[in-house]
Amino acid sequence: MRWSGQELTTEEPSTLPGLARLNNLVRSVRTPEFAGITFHEVLAKSALNKIPGGGGAMPFGWTINPYRGCSHACVYCFARPTHAYLELDGGKDFDNEIIVKVNVAEVLRKELMKPSWGHHPVALGTNTDPYQRAEGRYALMPGIIDALAETGTPFSILTKGTLLRRDLGKLSDAARHVPVDIAMSIAVYDDELQQSVEPGTPSTKARLATVTAVRDHGLDCSVFLMPILPYLTDTRAHLDEALRQAREAGATSVLYTALHLKPGVKEWYYLWLEREHPQLLPVYRRMYGRGAHAPKEYRQWLAAKIKPLIRAHGLEHGREDPLTGGVRSTALGMLRDGEGERRIVGAGGTTAAPRQAGPAFAAEEVQGDAIGVTMLGVQPTLF
Image (cartoon, rainbow, N blue to C red):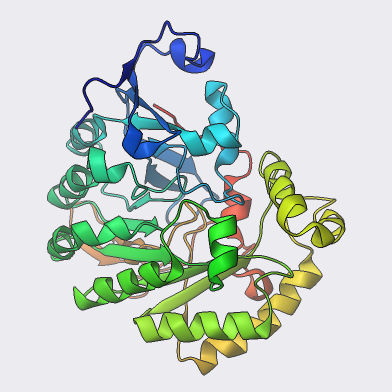
């Protein structure tokens, strides 16, 4: 799992202070295969991260983050500020200083085996991508998938990583035992822009091919058309082509939202914008000057444009989990009664699925923006 001969001692001047103080840091590793990237291997104290919600049938959500930081280097990534908890910055450090929880699968299995575990749906990929490049060497996801499936725990995966294809056989097997929901994040359908704003990600074509591979394994696959970048990817032509390609690839639903820029992300995105599209910087400053969200008027305008296109392409308007920000698990309509049997629960009895938990922010004109709302102010469990 780990590389030999590439270790950095924690006493070296280059070691970052926040990491050096961790008592669970195993070592820091560099390798020519990942030029410019340092992997900090840690022993996780916990694997499951509980996210409080707004009441309802499911008052909280659960996530797993096998990695912190992400070599996909998306300039708009809302998770960038999480690196500050380790005295790392949300810019280059987020892209190049990757925390790897090398024992996450073992810790997870122990947590899921506890009698107190309620078999709640668990989301992966809602903070940093579990199928970023490092997963090809560390291979943490197969153990995580096995632990979830073998303990009867439903789960969802949201990723930009085509490495997902490696585990499709395992995911297909898991889906025979528990609900498994998969989504690919594919926001930009202009190759030059995509490589500029998401420099470490697989191409749009490769991700669309992964959608097709998921479908070929008998699994549904949603496409997250998010974030939509104002004045860059919000034209009718771009949206129409995006939806056409998603449909052609076999996507079963599409979710969208306008760009969300919270503090710590906004500054990094603005640096990119000033370098690549300086004429748009004043426009963005006006749009996001008062907060993290695009103005309500813009979101309404965007909804009026894209909703008819979604219908025209025969795509379902997907549902986002308002607590985790990932694709909404099909298991959210199922709770366990006192005898451990699954039942459909509704306000009027036991025949209908429950109402969607969480805030009512994801209204028609802002469908998909729940991710920006729920992540604000939430301090993630790092280890």
